[in-house]
Image 1 (cartoon, one colour):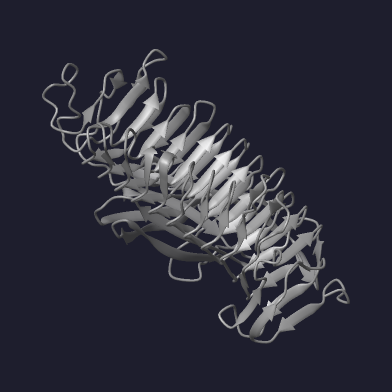
Image 2: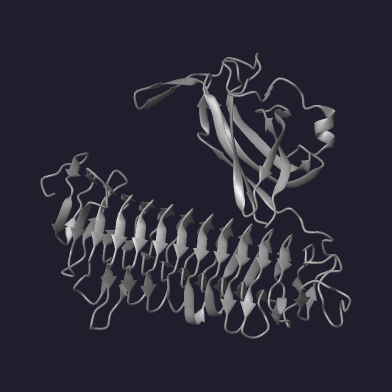
Length: 523
């Protein structure tokens, strides 16, 4: 490794390598010939396995089993891999049975991986059976770090204090498309977010994580200014309080399109216990259980719960634990019955979920809304004339029933009109799952240069919209020569119609038809 230069590749043959404290040099691509199942670096507890310091994103660690790391110092981070002000790509590894425990007291976090500064990309790894004395049994994100954590299986990890699977402390992170299961900690069995500023939690599954003596079986959040959860699932997690999710009085929590089901608590908040600011929208709260009387959501007065479906939870579906602040605004939800939620004074004839006092629930939905949410994922947002605009439209169904709907799209031309891009196209979103539509359009040689806005909407018709999404893309006039991009001055105007890769019409010349304007395809 000491002889390697920036841009070099080290290709490792299958075998078990008894090594520890390996310094991965900046810009080196360290990979195996045959994958992590047959290529193991094993430290046997004599030190951590690998570390990177000051590395950039060209540095790659891929295709290894990283096992048995345990740093010697009591103030240690990263049993398997330690990143110090480094931004490597850590991809397709099995990181298992690494620990940061020590007989002497100290700060010991990040059993599998620890990030101290930098922006590592942690992608498609199996991170399992690692342990930490303090925080982050699987992954620890420390001061100043901002990793991308995507498509990992984080399973069976534990910590004595916070974040059995993942802990973010005084850092930030994007945590997306992971399965986080069977982890344990005092705060946040699956994950914990502490003293951090901005964390995005998107499309993850939190299952069977536990916080047996404290809070947040799936996730626990404290002293954090902004955490956003989108399209996650919290299933069968357990804790003393906040079986699925817990946040303290100093934290702000935005939850959208998320499922909380079959979570359990010994005391309160089978699904959610929020002591701070909570905005809960378009989510499902169902089948959550409590050892006391609140299996659904516990939150403070002044918080907001809208467009949700709540049913078959133990005791109260929503409980205001701090009514002195204000009522909880819980209007526009489905409570399991057309008569609305039951409250002995406010709605004694309600046959739906029961609610506590100081809950503003009127008006409510008379039938369950479909709760199908739309995301658009463009392949590229900078295009040359003659290239194809391609994207995936993902329709996520967070209910327990299949839903049939229509997807349509329009595009805003630079300094021009909003015109149809895609006629209404039928789809079926399976229960508790999603369906994806792949779409492509050819950018003509005469397309106007500039920034376009692409808008998609779904619903039973274009006058009954469930959800919408959009993205911007730029059309530029230029050529690619090697790795250098050369632009040219704008000279053409739109003279031809864009045609899609399939059979879907896309006309950038035509003004939006009146019927589309009336039916709601607009910004």
